[in-house]
Length: 252
Ligand SMILES: C[S@@+](CC[C@H](N)C(=O)[O-])C[C@H]1O[C@@H](n2cnc3c(N)ncnc32)[C@H](O)[C@@H]1O
Image (cartoon, rainbow, N blue to C red; front, top):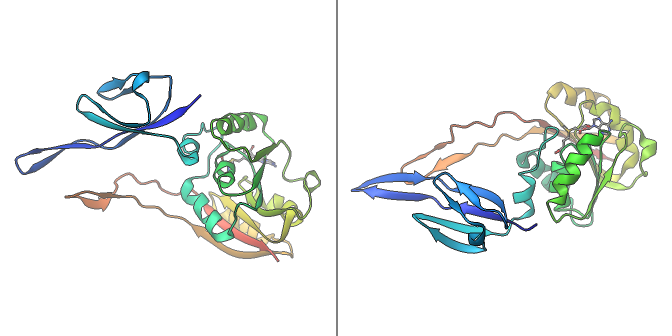
């Protein structure tokens, strides 16, 4: 079923010199054959066609969704990796369309999908059937065809091929227990990136790194959105707070 992203464009009016803000930009993901109810009205399904549309006092822009438009609306079974935390994994490891990635655990499939948008193939691993079901349904909503779901325990290296992967992303609560797997499945020069909400999980992982896994750095990405308008210029009041730490390791 085709989906479209519908933007209700912002509106303002003037009372003399005074600017009156009527509504912010609003973004919706809609099925082509369904109508869209928004705060003050409704777009009929026959209105939801690519391009610009005027309806009463509102103006809409209707576009095709990108992969990220779909991924950021995934149903969440487990806690997902955010875009801000996925970005440095891509930038710092230099993965590209040739790269092969192993990702554990799958969770809702968010990180696997963000990476699949960039790399050749992602093998995403989870032991929880329910989580895999949610992730598969999520991925079906995109046009990503390069995600392979593997229902196995990441703690057992024998389940996976040796020296095969360029990147191993590890987002489970006991990452130190998967270091043997990481050591075996990574190619020389490949990266392990551990994502953990707690710094003590990172510390334990770094302290237990085996000989060929070289610790590089740990970072926390703090994102602060700003409100920018003609008369307003300040950080948004809504604070996203802490998500997690990213620990970068390389097989040398
Ligand atoms: C926080 S979620 C991962 C979220 C994922 N990165 C995302 O962006 O959607 C952690 C997942 O790890 C899985 N997991 C925990 N231990 C595992 C193991 N030993 N082998 C494979 N998967 C495991 C859990 O079932 C859970 O789905």
